[in-house]
Picture 1 (cartoon, rainbow, N blue to C red):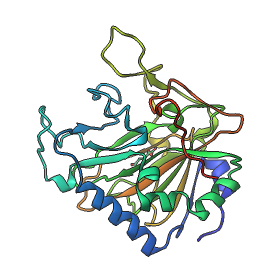
Picture 2 (cartoon, rainbow, N blue to C red; picture 1 turned 90 degrees about the vertical axis):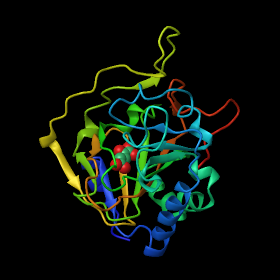
Picture 3 (cartoon, rainbow, N blue to C red; picture 1 turned 120 degrees about the vertical axis):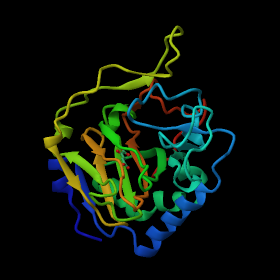
Amino acid sequence: MSEWPLDQYDTNGFAVIEDFFTEEETNELRESGLELCKNAPENHRQTFSTKDAASHLKDDYFLSSANKIHYFYEDGALDGDGNLLVDKRVAINKIGHALHVLHSTFKKYTFDERVKNVAKKLGFKKPSIPQSMFIYKNPKIGGEVKPHQDATFLHTVPISITGFWIPTEDATLENGCLWFIKGSHKHGLDRRVVRNTNPNSNELLVFDNPPPKYSQDLFTPTPVKKGSLVIIHGLVVHQSESNRSNKSRLAYTFHVMETENVKYSPDNWLQLPEGEDFPKLF
Ligand SMILES: O=C(O)CCC(=O)C(=O)O
Protein backbone atom coordinates (compact mmCIF):
# COMPACT_ATOMS: atom_id res chain seq x y z
CA MET A 1 0.00 0.00 0.00
CA SER A 2 1.33 3.48 -0.82
CA GLU A 3 2.10 6.06 1.87
CA TRP A 4 -0.75 7.64 3.82
CA PRO A 5 -1.68 10.87 1.99
CA LEU A 6 -3.47 12.89 4.70
CA ASP A 7 -1.87 16.21 3.66
CA GLN A 8 -3.00 15.62 0.09
CA TYR A 9 -6.52 14.92 1.33
CA ASP A 10 -6.69 18.08 3.45
CA THR A 11 -5.34 20.25 0.62
CA ASN A 12 -7.19 18.79 -2.35
CA GLY A 13 -10.30 17.19 -0.86
CA PHE A 14 -9.39 13.77 -2.23
CA ALA A 15 -6.51 11.33 -2.01
CA VAL A 16 -5.38 8.18 -3.74
CA ILE A 17 -3.89 5.18 -1.95
CA GLU A 18 -2.47 2.82 -4.56
CA ASP A 19 -2.50 -0.97 -4.14
CA PHE A 20 -5.10 -0.68 -1.41
CA PHE A 21 -6.48 -4.09 -2.30
CA THR A 22 -4.34 -6.81 -3.86
CA GLU A 23 -4.84 -7.91 -7.45
CA GLU A 24 -6.61 -11.05 -6.29
CA GLU A 25 -8.94 -9.12 -3.96
CA THR A 26 -9.69 -6.54 -6.65
CA ASN A 27 -10.51 -9.30 -9.11
CA GLU A 28 -12.88 -10.85 -6.57
CA LEU A 29 -14.73 -7.52 -6.30
CA ARG A 30 -14.84 -7.23 -10.08
CA GLU A 31 -16.14 -10.77 -10.57
CA SER A 32 -18.82 -10.17 -7.92
CA GLY A 33 -19.95 -7.05 -9.78
CA LEU A 34 -20.11 -8.94 -13.07
CA GLU A 35 -21.97 -11.84 -11.47
CA LEU A 36 -24.56 -9.49 -9.95
CA CYS A 37 -25.42 -8.16 -13.39
CA LYS A 38 -26.61 -11.58 -14.45
CA ASN A 39 -29.39 -11.43 -11.83
CA ALA A 40 -30.91 -8.19 -13.11
CA PRO A 41 -34.70 -8.57 -12.92
CA GLU A 42 -36.51 -8.62 -16.25
CA ASN A 43 -39.73 -7.16 -14.89
CA HIS A 44 -38.52 -3.92 -13.34
CA ARG A 45 -36.14 -1.86 -15.36
CA GLN A 46 -35.37 1.73 -14.40
CA THR A 47 -32.65 4.04 -15.71
CA PHE A 48 -30.26 6.14 -13.66
CA SER A 49 -28.73 9.30 -14.99
CA THR A 50 -27.18 12.29 -13.27
CA LYS A 51 -28.32 14.54 -16.14
CA ASP A 52 -31.61 15.05 -14.45
CA ALA A 53 -31.45 13.32 -11.10
CA ALA A 54 -35.10 13.73 -10.19
CA SER A 55 -37.27 13.41 -13.25
CA HIS A 56 -36.25 9.91 -14.36
CA LEU A 57 -37.72 8.43 -11.17
CA LYS A 58 -41.07 6.90 -11.96
CA ASP A 59 -41.72 5.13 -8.67
CA ASP A 60 -40.06 4.32 -5.37
CA TYR A 61 -37.70 1.63 -6.76
CA PHE A 62 -34.82 4.11 -6.30
CA LEU A 63 -36.06 5.65 -3.04
CA SER A 64 -36.63 2.27 -1.40
CA SER A 65 -33.21 0.84 -2.27
CA ALA A 66 -31.39 1.72 1.00
CA ASN A 67 -31.73 -1.84 2.33
CA LYS A 68 -31.92 -3.68 -1.00
CA ILE A 69 -29.96 -4.62 -4.08
CA HIS A 70 -31.63 -2.69 -6.89
CA TYR A 71 -30.55 -2.37 -10.51
CA PHE A 72 -30.39 0.87 -12.49
CA TYR A 73 -29.88 1.00 -16.25
CA GLU A 74 -28.00 3.36 -18.50
CA ASP A 75 -29.85 6.19 -20.13
CA GLY A 76 -30.27 4.87 -23.66
CA ALA A 77 -30.32 1.20 -22.66
CA LEU A 78 -34.13 1.01 -22.47
CA ASP A 79 -37.06 2.03 -24.62
CA GLY A 80 -40.10 3.79 -23.15
CA ASP A 81 -41.61 0.44 -22.09
CA GLY A 82 -38.48 -0.77 -20.28
CA ASN A 83 -37.38 -3.12 -23.09
CA LEU A 84 -33.64 -3.51 -23.62
CA LEU A 85 -32.19 -1.63 -26.59
CA VAL A 86 -28.63 -2.94 -26.02
CA ASP A 87 -26.93 -6.16 -24.96
CA LYS A 88 -27.89 -6.89 -21.36
CA ARG A 89 -24.20 -7.30 -20.40
CA VAL A 90 -23.59 -3.57 -20.93
CA ALA A 91 -27.00 -2.18 -20.03
CA ILE A 92 -26.55 -1.58 -16.28
CA ASN A 93 -25.35 1.79 -14.97
CA LYS A 94 -25.14 0.80 -11.30
CA ILE A 95 -26.45 -1.53 -8.61
CA GLY A 96 -27.13 -0.36 -5.05
CA HIS A 97 -27.51 0.57 -2.28
CA ALA A 98 -27.05 -2.18 0.35
CA LEU A 99 -24.35 -4.37 -1.19
CA HIS A 100 -22.29 -3.86 1.98
CA VAL A 101 -25.07 -5.46 4.03
CA LEU A 102 -26.55 -8.09 1.74
CA HIS A 103 -23.67 -9.38 -0.36
CA SER A 104 -20.92 -11.38 1.35
CA THR A 105 -18.02 -10.21 -0.86
CA PHE A 106 -18.88 -6.52 -0.76
CA LYS A 107 -19.53 -6.81 2.98
CA LYS A 108 -16.13 -8.43 3.54
CA TYR A 109 -14.21 -5.65 1.76
CA THR A 110 -16.30 -2.77 3.14
CA PHE A 111 -15.69 -3.87 6.74
CA ASP A 112 -12.04 -4.78 6.08
CA GLU A 113 -9.46 -3.71 8.71
CA ARG A 114 -7.70 -1.53 6.10
CA VAL A 115 -10.91 0.42 5.52
CA LYS A 116 -11.37 0.84 9.28
CA ASN A 117 -7.79 2.12 9.61
CA VAL A 118 -8.34 4.74 6.90
CA ALA A 119 -11.55 5.88 8.62
CA LYS A 120 -9.67 6.16 11.93
CA LYS A 121 -6.92 8.22 10.31
CA LEU A 122 -9.56 10.51 8.81
CA GLY A 123 -10.80 11.13 12.37
CA PHE A 124 -14.02 9.11 12.37
CA LYS A 125 -15.14 8.14 15.90
CA LYS A 126 -18.34 6.14 15.36
CA PRO A 127 -18.71 5.80 11.60
CA SER A 128 -21.52 4.06 9.80
CA ILE A 129 -22.00 3.06 6.15
CA PRO A 130 -25.21 4.44 4.65
CA GLN A 131 -24.79 3.13 1.10
CA SER A 132 -22.75 1.11 -1.36
CA MET A 133 -22.86 0.80 -5.14
CA PHE A 134 -21.26 -1.10 -7.97
CA ILE A 135 -20.83 1.30 -10.90
CA TYR A 136 -20.29 -0.22 -14.35
CA LYS A 137 -19.41 2.59 -16.80
CA ASN A 138 -19.60 0.06 -19.62
CA PRO A 139 -17.85 0.51 -23.02
CA LYS A 140 -19.52 2.97 -25.40
CA ILE A 141 -22.65 3.38 -23.26
CA GLY A 142 -21.39 4.28 -19.74
CA GLY A 143 -22.92 7.68 -18.94
CA GLU A 144 -21.22 10.80 -17.61
CA VAL A 145 -21.55 11.72 -13.95
CA LYS A 146 -22.23 15.45 -13.77
CA PRO A 147 -20.16 17.67 -11.45
CA HIS A 148 -21.42 17.29 -7.90
CA GLN A 149 -20.56 17.20 -4.21
CA ASP A 150 -21.56 13.98 -2.45
CA ALA A 151 -23.03 15.96 0.48
CA THR A 152 -25.69 17.23 -1.96
CA PHE A 153 -27.14 13.71 -1.88
CA LEU A 154 -26.08 12.43 1.56
CA HIS A 155 -26.37 15.34 3.94
CA THR A 156 -25.40 15.28 7.61
CA VAL A 157 -25.11 18.10 10.16
CA PRO A 158 -22.25 18.82 10.34
CA ILE A 159 -21.10 17.50 6.93
CA SER A 160 -19.32 14.16 7.37
CA ILE A 161 -20.01 12.08 4.24
CA THR A 162 -16.84 10.61 2.75
CA GLY A 163 -16.67 8.46 -0.39
CA PHE A 164 -14.48 5.36 -0.67
CA TRP A 165 -14.12 4.59 -4.39
CA ILE A 166 -12.28 1.49 -5.61
CA PRO A 167 -11.86 0.88 -9.35
CA THR A 168 -11.70 -2.82 -10.12
CA GLU A 169 -10.21 -2.00 -13.53
CA ASP A 170 -7.73 0.78 -14.36
CA ALA A 171 -9.65 4.06 -14.56
CA THR A 172 -8.19 6.07 -17.44
CA LEU A 173 -8.84 9.25 -19.41
CA GLU A 174 -10.44 7.08 -22.10
CA ASN A 175 -12.84 4.99 -20.01
CA GLY A 176 -14.09 7.70 -17.65
CA CYS A 177 -11.80 8.28 -14.66
CA LEU A 178 -12.79 10.72 -11.92
CA TRP A 179 -12.02 14.45 -12.30
CA PHE A 180 -11.76 16.79 -9.29
CA ILE A 181 -11.68 20.51 -8.60
CA LYS A 182 -8.78 20.48 -6.18
CA GLY A 183 -9.51 22.35 -2.95
CA SER A 184 -13.22 22.82 -3.74
CA HIS A 185 -14.16 21.08 -0.47
CA LYS A 186 -13.29 24.39 1.21
CA HIS A 187 -16.02 26.49 -0.43
CA GLY A 188 -19.05 24.95 1.31
CA LEU A 189 -22.11 23.07 0.06
CA ASP A 190 -23.63 24.41 -3.18
CA ARG A 191 -26.99 22.66 -3.08
CA ARG A 192 -29.02 19.82 -1.63
CA VAL A 193 -31.49 17.35 -3.08
CA VAL A 194 -34.33 16.24 -0.82
CA ARG A 195 -37.45 14.14 -0.97
CA ASN A 196 -40.31 16.18 -2.40
CA THR A 197 -43.12 16.81 0.09
CA ASN A 198 -45.25 18.80 -2.35
CA PRO A 199 -48.38 16.67 -2.95
CA ASN A 200 -49.16 18.58 -6.16
CA SER A 201 -45.92 17.59 -7.86
CA ASN A 202 -45.00 14.20 -9.30
CA GLU A 203 -41.25 14.78 -8.91
CA LEU A 204 -39.98 12.47 -6.17
CA LEU A 205 -36.86 14.54 -5.45
CA VAL A 206 -36.19 18.26 -5.60
CA PHE A 207 -33.04 20.39 -5.59
CA ASP A 208 -32.95 23.55 -3.48
CA ASN A 209 -30.78 25.36 -6.05
CA PRO A 210 -29.98 25.06 -9.77
CA PRO A 211 -26.69 23.34 -10.67
CA PRO A 212 -23.73 25.67 -10.12
CA LYS A 213 -21.63 26.44 -13.20
CA TYR A 214 -18.18 24.95 -12.58
CA SER A 215 -15.70 25.82 -15.33
CA GLN A 216 -14.31 22.67 -16.96
CA ASP A 217 -10.84 24.29 -16.83
CA LEU A 218 -10.86 23.82 -13.06
CA PHE A 219 -11.08 20.01 -13.17
CA THR A 220 -8.03 17.78 -12.85
CA PRO A 221 -8.30 14.26 -14.29
CA THR A 222 -7.31 11.53 -11.86
CA PRO A 223 -6.52 8.26 -13.62
CA VAL A 224 -5.90 5.47 -11.11
CA LYS A 225 -4.84 1.84 -11.19
CA LYS A 226 -7.27 -0.92 -10.29
CA GLY A 227 -7.27 -1.79 -6.59
CA SER A 228 -6.48 1.79 -5.56
CA LEU A 229 -8.62 3.54 -2.98
CA VAL A 230 -9.77 7.07 -3.83
CA ILE A 231 -10.99 8.90 -0.72
CA ILE A 232 -13.50 11.61 -1.61
CA HIS A 233 -14.41 14.45 0.77
CA GLY A 234 -18.17 15.05 0.87
CA LEU A 235 -17.74 18.63 -0.34
CA VAL A 236 -15.16 18.21 -3.10
CA VAL A 237 -16.61 18.83 -6.59
CA HIS A 238 -16.02 15.88 -8.89
CA GLN A 239 -17.33 14.32 -12.08
CA SER A 240 -16.62 11.59 -14.61
CA GLU A 241 -17.01 11.67 -18.38
CA SER A 242 -19.01 9.20 -20.42
CA ASN A 243 -17.13 6.12 -21.54
CA ARG A 244 -16.76 6.10 -25.32
CA SER A 245 -13.87 3.62 -25.26
CA ASN A 246 -13.90 -0.13 -25.81
CA LYS A 247 -13.01 -0.86 -22.18
CA SER A 248 -15.28 -0.93 -19.15
CA ARG A 249 -14.46 0.94 -15.94
CA LEU A 250 -16.05 -1.09 -13.16
CA ALA A 251 -15.82 0.36 -9.65
CA TYR A 252 -17.08 -0.47 -6.18
CA THR A 253 -17.89 2.47 -3.92
CA PHE A 254 -19.42 3.12 -0.52
CA HIS A 255 -19.86 6.09 1.78
CA VAL A 256 -18.83 6.54 5.40
CA MET A 257 -20.46 9.04 7.75
CA GLU A 258 -19.97 10.02 11.38
CA THR A 259 -22.72 9.26 13.89
CA GLU A 260 -21.18 10.77 17.05
CA ASN A 261 -22.72 14.25 17.51
CA VAL A 262 -23.77 14.17 13.86
CA LYS A 263 -27.34 14.08 12.55
CA TYR A 264 -28.30 12.30 9.34
CA SER A 265 -30.74 14.61 7.56
CA PRO A 266 -34.28 13.20 7.62
CA ASP A 267 -35.10 14.65 4.19
CA ASN A 268 -32.20 12.86 2.42
CA TRP A 269 -33.41 10.64 -0.43
CA LEU A 270 -31.73 7.58 1.15
CA GLN A 271 -33.77 6.44 4.15
CA LEU A 272 -34.08 3.12 5.94
CA PRO A 273 -37.45 1.87 7.14
CA GLU A 274 -38.35 2.88 10.71
CA GLY A 275 -36.34 0.90 13.28
CA GLU A 276 -33.40 0.02 10.97
CA ASP A 277 -29.96 1.64 11.30
CA PHE A 278 -27.04 1.95 8.91
CA PRO A 279 -24.37 -0.57 9.96
CA LYS A 280 -21.48 0.73 12.05
CA LEU A 281 -18.02 0.47 10.50
CA PHE A 282 -16.60 0.11 14.03
O1 LIG B 1 -17.97 6.34 -10.62
C1 LIG B 1 -18.16 7.46 -11.12
O2 LIG B 1 -17.95 7.70 -12.29
C2 LIG B 1 -18.62 8.60 -10.27
C3 LIG B 1 -18.68 8.28 -8.83
C4 LIG B 1 -19.07 9.46 -8.01
O3 LIG B 1 -19.01 10.58 -8.43
C5 LIG B 1 -19.55 9.26 -6.66
O4 LIG B 1 -19.70 8.10 -6.24
O5 LIG B 1 -19.80 10.27 -5.99
